[in-house]
Length: 185
Figure 1 (cartoon, helix red, strand yellow):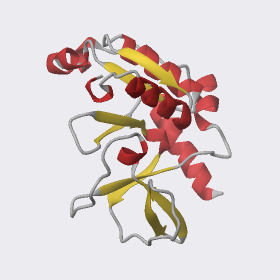
Figure 2 (tube, helix red, strand yellow):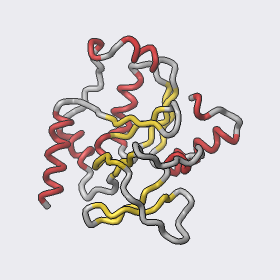
Figure 3 (spheres, rainbow, N blue to C red):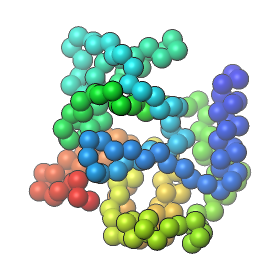
Figure 4 (tube, rainbow, N blue to C red):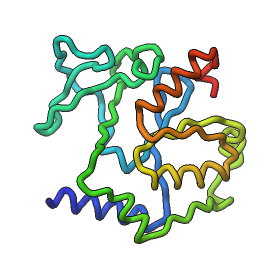
């Protein structure tokens, strides 16, 4: 119970500051991906994997992290890119889904989110790089998606939205099947 309360406290402090934070990362290339920090438990160096017989092609193996067995998924391969080759600097992002309490929804009802991005917080190179880009937003939280839409619209970013990973994967596959260069979006 203390763990849940600590998580609620941490998230309350973040939302109370009217901030949206994302963790950005790359998968074997120049294309950036991001995940809402609310979904991230931790980022750590790739631990030793235990291989499982007859595992799905996207599952690299499993790890035992503080007594909890977690699957390690090659996200690059899962979205149709080339598989990643683990190296000495490889990291994994441990995520958490299906919380007992939808903390984001509760906090959004208590503390309204101010999506106005202060001009002095943005650097011109960031604005120039963002303008005209296309972003695929994937989140199971309607609150987080609304916050991201409001924030990114101010940057001139074109957005495609999916409420879960399967819908996002189907969208990506559809673009690829139509001959679009998904990585250039």
